[in-house]
Length: 83
Image (cartoon, rainbow, N blue to C red; front, side, top):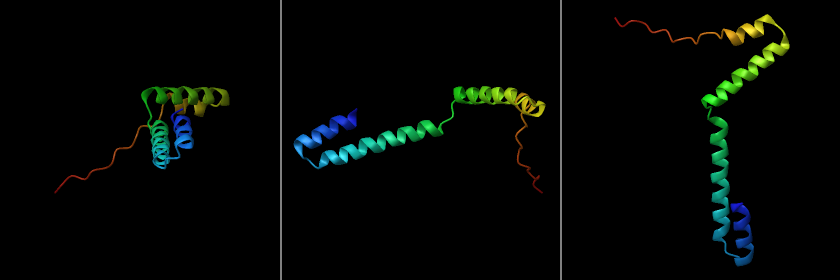
């Protein structure tokens, strides 16, 4: 919407700075979409788990269902005692 308004203003006024404003708005929009894509909220994690469960159920294999019900524990790094 903002890009359209700026495009009309650019065509009517022929001012070059509006092109830079349009680029800024486009960059701001791109960064917002990038953040939305990269951030994983709790809701997204729940949805991913439910989707994986449905896929495991549809595959009808016990191993797929067990991998959802009992996920592997994350490994902790091994630390050596000082001394």
